Length: 172
View 1: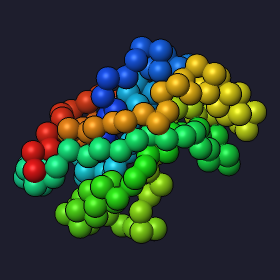
View 2 (view 1 turned 90 degrees about the vertical axis):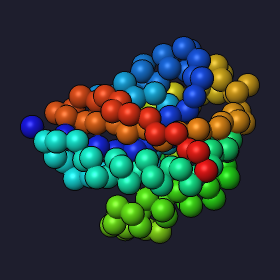
View 3 (view 1 turned 90 degrees about the horizontal axis):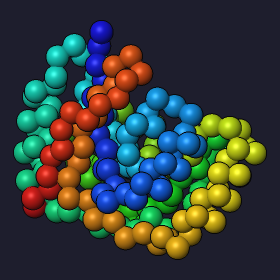
View 4 (view 1 turned 60 degrees about the vertical axis):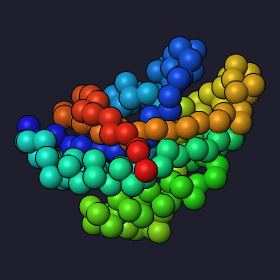
């Protein structure tokens, strides 16, 4: 069975309450991944770990400084029933994405993806609106939420099962 490898910036030091909120409000097997900002794929699905790509990532990360930003507000993709936290500023995310896109030859439909940290998925428009209200009642005191990412995570997906493969530290 082929395994997909993808990259994310996992938000450190998440409270159990925020984790429980996400698990309760994300209707997808990927809810086991902690709060994160997806960055991109690492390789096409394969039966073996992509050793060359992982080695390239480790080399790249020696030149990348930790990324600091704030998660500032809730936003939604209403047509796909996604509620998310918006990062700001996004310049360092764009810089990281550029390096990864060039290294791994990402096909780009747009210049940059909409960087976001998903907190709810599914339930239609009404479900997302209710999740947003609940999130604001419980966690508005966290925003803006200052984050420092010291590493990038490699995750795997195989047959809708997700697992962390490795963390690669930024040391630039």
